[in-house]
Image (cartoon, rainbow, N blue to C red):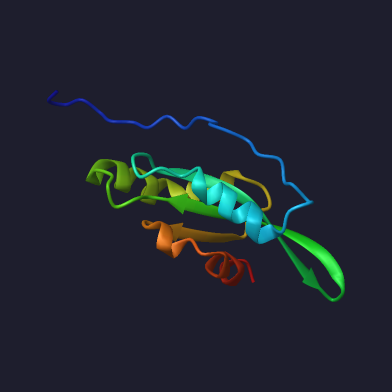
Length: 113
C-alpha cells in the first residue's frame, strides 16, 4: 500500500536453559540448530569460559540474518541490532551472521573475548 509504514514486532520465541552437564560447545551447536533460513532473529547466548582459574559467564548477542531474507527484513535486523544490545543489560559483545558457516563455536569464543 502506498504510504503504508512497515514496522517489526519483536517476540520471545523460545528459552533454553543452559545444560551444565553439556559442554559450552554442545550447547552452542544445539542453539544453532534452532535457527532457520526463513526467519532472522536475535539470540542471547551465555558463553562460559575460564579466566584466572574461575568459571566466568558472558552473554553474547547473536544477530541472525540469513541471506534468504528479503531486503526489508535484513534492514530491520541490521538497524535494530544496536538498540537491542542497549536494551538488554549486560550485553557487551555481539556476533552477526548471515550464514550458519559463520556461526562456529570458535567465532563465538573469539567474539566474546
